[in-house]
Image (cartoon, rainbow, N blue to C red; front, side, top):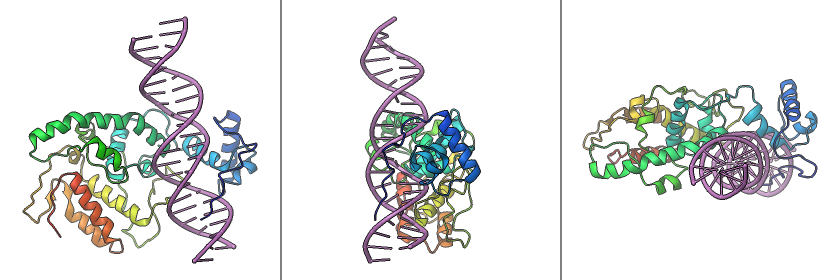
Amino acid sequence: MGRAPCCEKLGLKRGPWSKEEDDLLINYINKHGHPNWRALPKLAGLLRCGKSCRLRWTNYLRPDIKRGNFTPEEENTIIKLHQVLGNRWSGIAARLPGRTDNEIKNIWHTRLKKRVDDKSQPQETQDIQDQQPMEITSKSEENFETHSSEPENSKDNSEEISSPKTNFQIQEHPNSSSSTSSSRDSCSNTTATSTSSLADESRDQIMLDNLIEVDDNFWSEVLWAPAETNDYNVSDLSLSSLEENYELNSSLNDYWFWDDLFSTANELMLELPEL
DNA sequence: AATAGGCCCAACCGCGACGGT
DNA sequence: AACCGTCGCGGTTGGGCCTAT
């Protein structure tokens, strides 16, 4: 798989963008759009590589970008979504209108991660003492750090997480229609098209639909795990609805669904009977 | 007042995915 | 099937700003 060099470095400007460059880029895109980033800088009269232009546009110049500090609700949403999506910043950004993946990544690394880690530390020892009933608890920081691609375990963010309604919109499941095309990130805040597989997207959506949509108390409520019953009505986590989703999406791969279902349940310390 | 260290954020880099040829 | 071009993503970096000493 050949890959074109990012750009001809020679003669191309790097570093911070000037007001003039911003104006050139904005004017060009407003007039012509951006069908081809690679060709754009030349056409727009910019001494930048296309990649740099795309980044500047998507992360800074886009008109729909919301500037300013993150609200507590947005921060809580990021924490929630990160528990489900891991470091899939674009996926998180797609559910936070006006925010970019870069911005979210930055705020996670500089503020939220620390906050989550801090909260998890004292709670962890507390949980060992209490043991019951089952609560959403933290695992070791090591696990948290080394499994970023998997749904994160639920940290004890109850204080923040149980806060008022979050502002993301629950979307129709991407596979609930007959469409097989990717409908991830139908939220209009990004021009990015996904490179994730359909299975990944569907999985994310199912996880989000069932983990986040449930209700806000989910994140702070005590969860019971009735191991001996087949009625998996565990708090608000409706496994039956997960299964329904699964039925609706018979084309999806079994492996990822159950694998993720169990890993998520495991992270939430729920007991599931063998299937 | 000086400065060291931390924080924040825009920008860059390298990689994989994907479509076209 | 192999190659090429383009794009988007996540990780990382660099520098300005802020704060504590």
